[in-house]
Length: 447
Image (cartoon, rainbow, N blue to C red; front, side, top):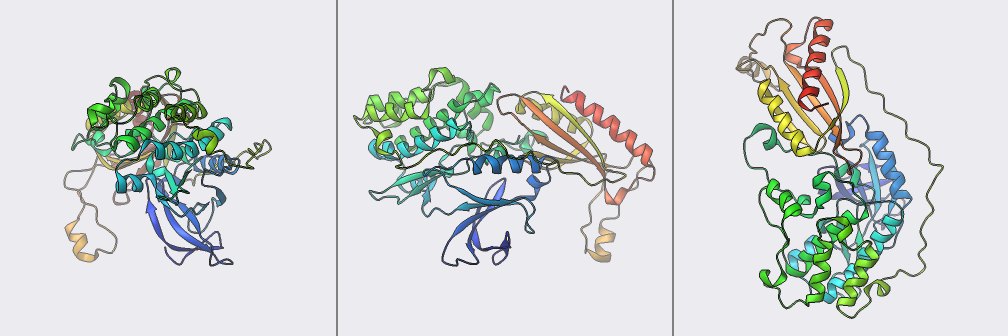
């Protein structure tokens, strides 16, 4: 996409990276070619969510109402840009904390304290504004002027974590084939988020505790290849003492602050980001909170007159049947239930991404999909097996959202579609089949 234009005024220069929700580009304004910004283009599978516009506009409002010297700033956004929904962010030259730790492995406590002061100021301002990040990790922290006396830190993706918090049931959980690996974020998630308890600002403080542990010791407090064991450790296991991981030289008072932040229940931890920074500083006879206080910054007032977002209309199709319902269960239990549904109904899972699962049900034996443009040889190679009328295969897409991460409530949109190779003839029969399958799916998920 290099060379294309976003919002009619930002030329994309080159890709900076890609995550599960967006791809990120370095860009330049057409009227200021020496200036740089970051453009985040939202992935198509996120845009296809039926409530995408509401989510997008709510996130943009959240980010627009939060501006802090230690947080990466939103400049503007567009939900209907020709290249797709985009957010234009402040460009911060530097490296992520993840990259810094890859370079140094661990950092001295005093250096950690200076970065923590910036970190906690951004968090305290966000929490005071009612914003909980929910996805704090070294990859979301930008270190500015790294390895210099001017070193500071900026938090990325405030207000954007709603997209990242979508339920993600891994493919191996649905098929039973292959291990279920931890993929980054589970290493930093709070016990209350795993338990499905109410989540508030103190959940972010647990993630800060994990990051502090990693910055000081060069490793995470819990190291497991399998996600289920890792999540269980957050809930049940005590983090290893610093001495046991070869870091007994770190002052005991510093370790005590980190271990407190890693308490299993929110009321046992520090109760604010400010308190965490002050306690860490006191352990080293410093005041990193005051040292990092940004001069002249004032919190922005919330925009109470912001208009409510307009729902997005979905295109109608005579054979596109959609049902919406809610399921009240943790994601891991939902994964087990959906695996049972797939196995019992002979399903084939095609895709499992954050917030989206796509599968096919009732495929005849020997069916192979022929890609467009395969020509006559492709036609011979992929001649479709016949099926009885009224038994055409069904493609089912589940779009899932967790509107309140504090509660184990999943909002599910089940979209039923025919395969192009097996178009049904009778709309009424097709509707009845999809409706019955919807009822069965609800029963599996306890809806």
